[in-house]
Length: 468
Image (cartoon, rainbow, N blue to C red; front, side, top):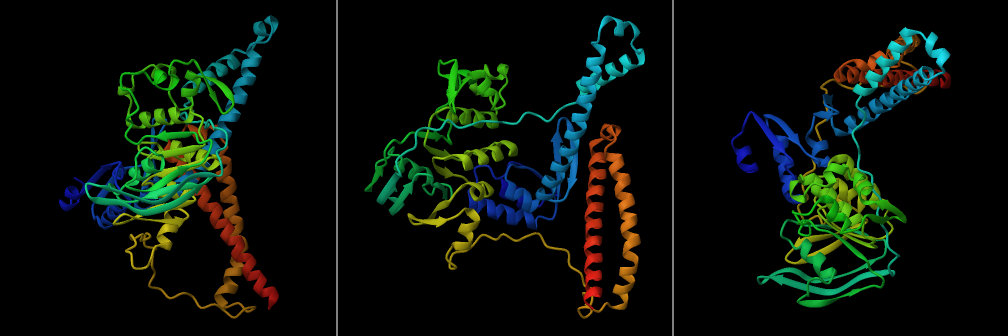
């Protein structure tokens, strides 16, 4: 359907999670096609590499407010962090003021008889603003129940072979997996990644070769097909299995509270599994997975349908995990951020190990193999010739004029900066529309960058004069 949509050459193309269930080669093809697409493109995605490569503007829906952020994904992250920091400072001041007013209103009977009615009305207004204010939506927050450490050797495979319908999926494959390894599996759909996992775990018998497991292995498996979820069970029963409390990372947790870490409210926890969205099902699988003590985690496409914040939190958790990880994923940034090496299916049953993540694999691939194009966005070009630099220690006429004007320019920029700072610390500033707030904050950041550049230029020119 993607191919058909592109062939029709529409004026506007709408895509909802276009990379879900695509392998890396197809994702790369899709990116290249969309870069060449001449119409407008509006897409929803959790694929950060796709977002960074394609998007020139981001629309964010946060607490019921839709905000347009110009620039790419990396620029959005910087701007959003700055906005949230300012918002948090404003909210802290507001809450302190509210607490002080609450304490005043609760003073003794005598004070209540003589209190300032205007102040009471102000307090009621503060309470109403607090009621209307919408804080950041909840974020998943979870810890992994870690088992006793396994032996140093986790899995050893020697000369494995396996065929399906007379087609070799795995040919003469050997590997030693040690405690603490985090290994990613890369290959096209249908190449045999899940089959290899099942061979390594002893769930499938190889046609040739042998697999040996180390000692004290406790395995937790994230199932891509969600086969272990009973659609008629409630979310609560799916995790609790008749228990009221769970032991998580050495702490006793009530099941409802534990599910709250995965953004399930008490009411939602009592809903049947069949009513869950794709993202909720994935969070439920993570809740089940992390409630099991494990020193070997096996994850088959865990990032599908996860929102970006939960995905990044999962990355942090896996980086802190002291056990061993086997991971199948088509999320390139996730692979780069999590794994220590990759097992790559190179065709005809051949599997080769590369140290590092997805980007490291691209750099290490044999030159004879076609490397997927990763063309960066074109940088602005100029037809004007660069200015000639004067000799060190000697300023040109234009540079002398520039040096004379810089102090006045810096003073002007500082005055403007102070005015904008005064504007942003005013609580009324945050009662405007989000688009206006983001424009002002962007103006402030651009001004600060320009001021810093002016200082650097001034110091550089002064330094050359002194050396001359």
